[in-house]
Image (cartoon, rainbow, N blue to C red; front, side, top):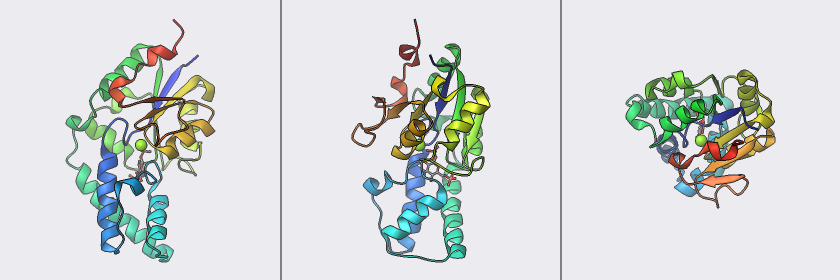
Length: 214
Ligand code: B16
Ligand code: MG
């Protein structure tokens, strides 16, 4: 049975997925590339350079590595501008309660985010102290959909992968959880996340006690 719950950040605990989208859209527009919300589904959970490469390919552009690094840094600047203003009011409804409830159930609580801004963001959101372990994109070699971030989180929590459940809003994240050998709870639309074991519409509907032995 489960001993740990490992949460994604963007799109699960806070709506920074929207800020990522707006920052990418702004950068893409400067390059003459238009991206919409449907395209953005492919960027969710994917790391910074991976997301940039998808956008450049979409626009038929192929700049060299130095230019790609400049573009990625520019996008991150737009994103940082947006999350400077974040505080606890930007937690999604039910997010804090979900973390507290997991702790009260006796579960270890982990964060598994692709974002190199994750530690900054959980400080701003006032939830840093609710995690027993935090792993982000800068801690592992391969981002989602590779299992590395979730495996590293399980290891840091001292549990086996099959003792953990992962909670994700992105297709790349669900793939990472499954590849890690964990149970996957998807948050969002079932058509966007066909591979999740369980789907709920928002974090406010998470009831981890349902998956624990009575
Ligand atoms: P950064 P998550 C992911 O965070 C976002 O979903 C994805 O859109 C973003 O590109 C990625 O982090 C990298 O973020 O540029 O801040 O390092 O969903 O895994 O918490
Ligand atoms: Mg996410």
